[in-house]
Length: 174
Ligand SMILES: CC(C)(COP(=O)(O)OP(=O)(O)OC[C@H]1O[C@@H](n2cnc3c(N)ncnc32)[C@H](O)[C@@H]1OP(=O)(O)O)[C@@H](O)C(=O)NCCC(=O)NCCS
View 1 (tube, rainbow, N blue to C red):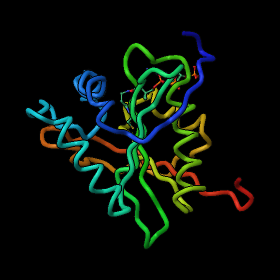
View 2 (cartoon, rainbow, N blue to C red):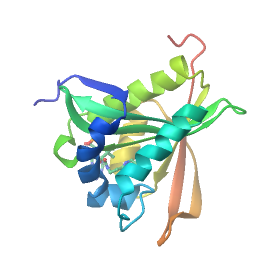
View 3 (tube, helix red, strand yellow):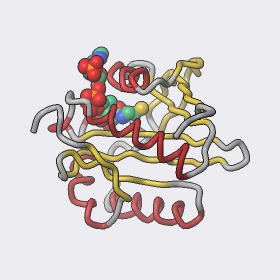
View 4 (spheres, rainbow, N blue to C red):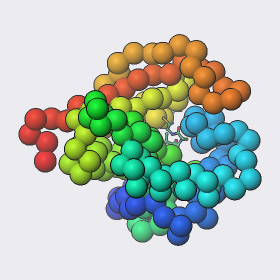
């Protein structure tokens, strides 16, 4: 599969749990996301249950990324803040699919979903200061760096500087 394999995002469901389990256990994903490390038993199922509840409440949304029709990662909205018309977005790509523009294509699709389907005005990213690949993706999708929050407790056992990036919906965004 080359760099041109079509990237799509589809609502995350039971059918994505198996490849998601492998993605969640990847060292880079554990390093740079809020997934607990080590992963507890049954993490994938409880993660999906949380997203399904959030989807029903209108506060969260989760997508599987497909590249050439094959599972290649996740594109998620862990928090939709209706009061601010803002949402936090996140992404992770399976190790075998990295380095081909998959995250960049998926973040653009997720951002368009947030602006055009969810009515969000402000899309926000929180990126570990050491996560150069993710900052590349943010920049490629026209997010701009806002500031760095020092010493954030990302999860139990991990404290690090966290960069905040933002993209606002363009007035004529389609
Ligand atoms: C970050 C991540 C999603 C990127 O996925 P990807 O599909 O490989 O990303 P893309 O191919 O779209 O773009 C990555 C860019 O970063 C660059 N890059 C990769 N590693 C890099 C590094 N260590 N330093 C600098 N740039 C790097 C690539 O060259 C590429 O830039 P280019 O398009 O100009 O060539 C993937 O590495 C991942 O899943 N990491 C673990 C989870 C994670 O960090 N999620 C984000 C949390 S904020």
